[in-house]
Figure 1 (cartoon, rainbow, N blue to C red):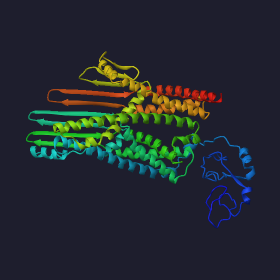
Figure 2 (cartoon, rainbow, N blue to C red):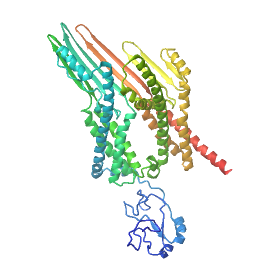
Figure 3 (tube, rainbow, N blue to C red):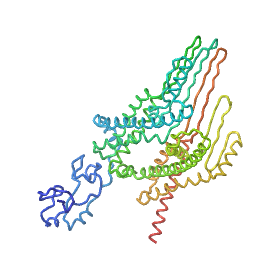
Length: 556
């Protein structure tokens, strides 16, 4: 039996609705009372956030619904005074929410997120290593283990088969943007000659697509937390997200000490001796900071999503001041970057399929070996490269050039090349990149990249249009919108670059040689931050004027 006033389901034995008291036995009471719909998602007494399903405030117990005569219901609604939004968020409320109980409640979701991330990293690592093992066997006609056993039999030395250079622990660390450092130490005696070799290489090349591993895990953790803690205020969300991020960061910090690759080799025969060791290490402090930051953002996104399982940042308008501006800034960034990445993935995947067909024809004609794994990973490879390339190009669309820099001691000078979408190539030697300019012009690459700027322009104009439609056109709104958009764009620029630095020292009986290398291919994140802020502010303001112009045109 359903109440004709509020629609609540009641048992067949009920005479009155358990929710609003409406008579279920006759229609006379329907003319007397009617529930007045709520016009706000906040408690009118204390300002705490509420949901449409709640009849009483969970913070102070104040009733959230009222009854009125049916014939005067409309008048009652008109007489309701909707209080100004009380977002119940401040720094004091944020810090007071840090309690032992809340921290304990965040422990289970953080543990679940970490375990899920490890499982996902293991599956990704297994897939990658299966691919590389297949290529290795295709080329050498034996596995790495079989090769080690063959060398051991031929030399009589004890050589153990090395494990995978990039295992699931490395996937877990790199997915959190933590760069690995490789060190190699070797020394030996051959006859009367004695020498040593020491090398160190740090590779900071983040994978944008691998960020989905920790983000997905922590996103689920945010949903899991809200399932057991029915919090509604943003200060509670943020406190829980910080707690989950801190716990998750501690776990990854400890995990970093057990991550990486390690291999030792010792060969001794007669008077000759050779010893070598290769190790991978990760900076534990970087692991904690980056994992904690990712944990806060991803788990907070999960909590916001759990409010209705349809939107994420859309809820910010009801939770924090200038929440709609923050939502529009994040949405404009995500929509434009995802669209650009999809375009690159489709282009690269299509080209790879064309190349694959040509390679298949050539391999059949010339009886060449071809790994089936290589053919099966076409779209996986396209997704990896397309996302990475899309991130670089998206940063460049904000009038910031891509810089290639290399310093090698043996060269004696720096090599520096810049490419700007609207300026072409420039190099430190003068005229060195003329052929690249010609190649880009012949294949219309420059034209395509210039056309790509229409993607962020369109979404930024639409964001300004949407803000004006909601009557939010003051300067503070545009500043918040531009700041949110520029921060995420700058973070993407920093994450998409490749930085490599290394040094080698070789010592012999008579001399010592040293060599250093520094290599960079990246977009300046500071410049992206500033220029994207100006670009977002200008275009969003223009979008608001488009709305005003279209509104005036409709009225006229």
